[in-house]
Structure formats: C-alpha cells, structure tokens
Image (cartoon, rainbow, N blue to C red; front, side, top):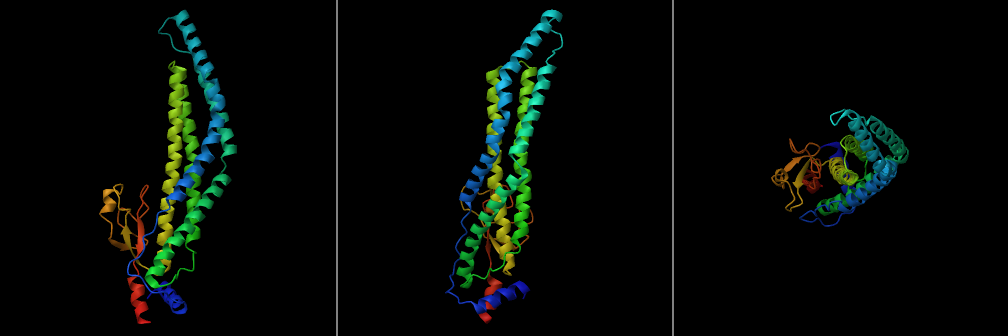
Length: 295
C-alpha cells in the first residue's frame, strides 16, 4: 500500500460514507470555460492590434500611390525595364510597423496575460474539482481528495506557456501584415486587393487566438485530473472519449482501455494531451475498494 492510499483509507475510516454506486458518472468537459477563455484572449489581443495597425492601414492608399508614381517616373526616364525605386515606401512601412509593435508592447503586457491565464487556470481547476468529486463520491461513498499541492505548479506552467503563446499571436499577425504591405508596395498591388489580404490575415490571427485558448484549457484540465487521481493513491485510469463522430481514430481505439496514471499511452500520453483532445481519465478505484472492503 502506498502512502497516498494509506491517507485515503484513513480519511475513509474517519468520514461518514454514502452508499456506493455501481457506475461512475462521466466527467463533463469544460466547454463553457474554453469558450469564455477564447473570447477573453481575443478581446485581449485583437482590439489593441487593430488600433496599433490603424495608422499603417490609413496610410496604405498613399503608400501604394507614391510607390506607383515613383515606378512610373523611372520607367519614363530610363525605360520599362529599369529597376524600381520604391525603397522609400518600404522603409516607411517598416518604420510604421515598428511603431505599431511599440504600441502593442504597451497594450498587451506580460502581467496582463498572466492575470488572465491565472484566472482561467483557477476556473478550470475549480470546475475539474467538482467533476472528480462526483466520481469519488460515487465510487467510495465520500470525497477523499483534500490536498491540491500538486496543482499549484501546474497552474504556474499553464500561465508561463500561455504568456508565450498569446504574445506570439499579435507578433505573427504584425509580421505577416508587414510582409503583405511590403510586397504590395513592391508589386504595385491595388489597394482593394491588399485590404482583402490584410483582413484575411487578421481573421486567421483571431482564429489562432481562439484555438490556443481552447487547446490550453483542455490540456490543463487533463493534467489536473491526472494529478488529482494520483494524489488519491489511484494508479490506473480508464480512457474515455466523447463518443461522437469527432473523436480521432487513434483515441477511439483507446476508449475503455486502462493505463497507468501519470504515464498514459506510449504515444498519445494522457487524455487531453493531444491537440484539442476532448477525452478524459476515469479513475480506477479497484485497489482502494479492495482495501476498503477489508476495513
């Protein structure tokens, strides 16, 4: 018997217990928290990005027209095959993007992202605590999870990773917009075509922000669930999918199989580890129940 199992059994001896149920309730995924975090991340990133890019987008017609005039003057003087001299507009684009980056650095701070990530780590942890409590009460007749020491470092890891991922979103959008505008200036793009391209870049960036939020909440839920199962002295879990058409074939094949807590499948890891994985762990209480029956 492990020290964690001994602690759980001691608590079971001391606590009044309800009748046990034959089947454990399934954990309900934290979809509402995922959606709320996605909206919060988009609200944190996109409005400051649009404000930061506004001067460049307002100057875009003039930049394109100025570059076109410069090319036309060169062709008139030196011929149609003469080299283009629109480096001045390209340099102006680079300068305006640098100013936009400074604006973003002041608007989207590390401290702000940390606060947001920590808030949703707490929400996810609290929600998952309710889900696993339903299962422990069903299996053991009471809730024996009294310590959450393993969760604190997981929260710190979640916050650090989300800071890096979220800060990367506006940086990539800004870089892609700069490339598009510089290319448009050099190639005599029409303003309407370039505007459509930039809107597409912004939409993809917003989708990326939503994707990060959803994926990160799912991953965090999975590792917290695994840590709490392990803290009770449970050493095995049953893999549970969402049982719908969106389940990836590799995970459908794992549904109902048992794996070691903290290890999981040799390639897929634990439920929730894969990108946008909606699977979860069901704790296997067999060893605790066997000891409990001896009491």
